[in-house]
Image (cartoon, helix red, strand yellow):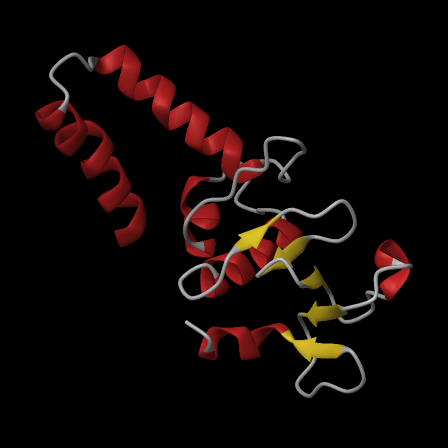
Length: 143
């Protein structure tokens, strides 16, 4: 609730104070755009992620945001501070132009990145890793 109030304060007070050309209609459009982004799975070629997975809960109209988008947002948010993260031809993310990651739930397999040599699975819902499977929560320590 506090996060939602802060978002509304930013949109309704802070933005108009900085950009005097914004009016009520513009603010409603920005709010609607943020809500749409929070409720849609990222799409290609214009992958858009919010800065923080918590924002999906605060901005999503359905109040049931896409878990995959939140996982990927968490992953990219943790790694982008110290690494270069881009979108590869296969997989979800290419880190430092050398390591491909596929992000998913505990049952995710390497099927989507078949043929990629240097790959890892960053998986939610597992406590320990093995083989090429790394628990997603461990990437929080990279930040």
